[in-house]
Image (cartoon, rainbow, N blue to C red; front, side, top):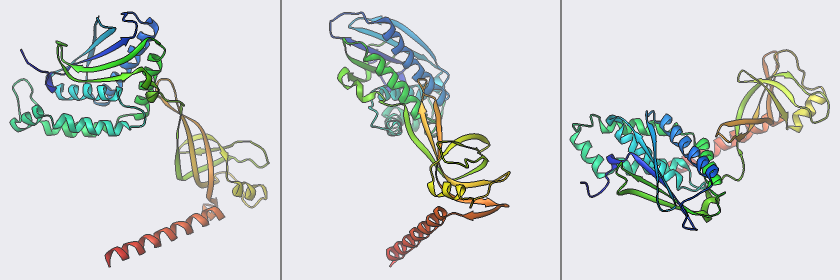
Length: 328
């Protein structure tokens, strides 16, 4: 019998809910919703890393409430599943202030620098595990770039927001182990007083900015008021707020003519929110500055456009001078 759990043994993750009254009961709705959010995280990561896993929930244990989730996989996916379980463990124990990119990078390093994996890499093959370690590492690094950080942060937030509803919950222990559940490979605790560190306080996300957005104007606003413009952006019809007072003045004073096919080049902001399922939704568009409008397909620079061009030219000259000084 093995004295310890090795990385390639990992196929099970344990969630242990410690209750302060020493009981083994927990509100069923809270418990089931926590498990739902956890499983949705597992599903999201397994899809991202293209691992076909079948998750089986095992009976609850003693000591508060303990649930085990075993991930069945083919031998060829052993390293990826181990990586996935390791990542799940760290993900659930990482506060919002730390990016998932940082967590993923650390897990990648720890998994592929593990002595067992390094030994396999040297051997190049093992009878029951026919794979090339360097290929798996390369594939995993590439797939890590596909992680949807917003979605996982929201699902993790949902998990802890739900868990916080159980007032007698002292802490949650997340453990990576093997099928025997006898020994731990890695184990992390999150105490209830720290749950707020994992919960998103707002569904609003940082807005996206397109500094060279081209919008074909369908319907401009030609009078004062809080009306929205209508245009086509990247093939999609959008409503947007015109926040450039300079450009609005040009329009209202008749200095900018509009006709069929008229377009503007502008700084466009896309405001976003994340829903309960972790899906990002655009909640509105705002044009902050207009740099050009078009007359008969000819771009006409606006005062805002001229100032931006001059600013960029100045910055370019400063960089050129800096490079010259560095080379002296």
